[in-house]
Image (cartoon, rainbow, N blue to C red):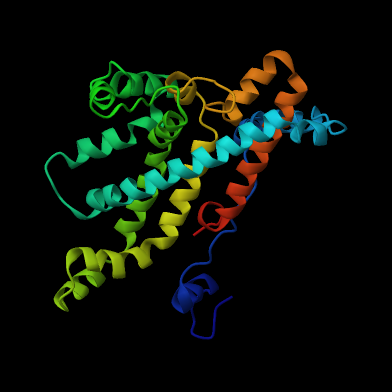
Length: 283
């Protein structure tokens, strides 16, 4: 059988727009499906177990105890201050890494992101060696200004900022690299200084990236444990944050530890919900 033009149907199809595509199977191969389901269970089952074992009948009493509120209040204050420190010095650092080409920029970027993979306890030891009373900087702070950072509330803020700021820097640097630098160049041609262009043009462009990075840094600071207990200790009312309170309660009152963990879990879910447009939507 031929087409009106005397061509076979397949050839006519080629002339009209190319060969017909074969229907692609969309099934999931079993060797991929089983590990994927195992991964989902591995990550979700512990969280479900936390919810199942939560003492819901005594949860209000656990969450309204003075010790819990004291730890929660200190955690919120220190995490917010640590995020503020990260914003003040992290945003200019991200701009430097994204906009200025200088020798050793790759090394600086690697060192800035090192706390992401550095064990938090090692970070706490490093802070002690730098800012402790006998540290290379801390001894001068103590002798010249009488400032002692370890085992104080300020030490908690420093420890949390140390581990949280890389999240902000990475987020803001990525946003800066995606932003068109021609807007800054246009502002410069109109007579704006470099700082004015940054303040009036660049900051509004990268505001979503700064907000996302700040939320991530705040959440990381709120959950910090290793560097905090190493550098600031675990003193109720002064340095005992929520993660430290969970660790302490787990040894004597597991139900209180579960209740405190539930609060941190709720905060983590709220952070993910707030960043769903950035992290959970396909581009």
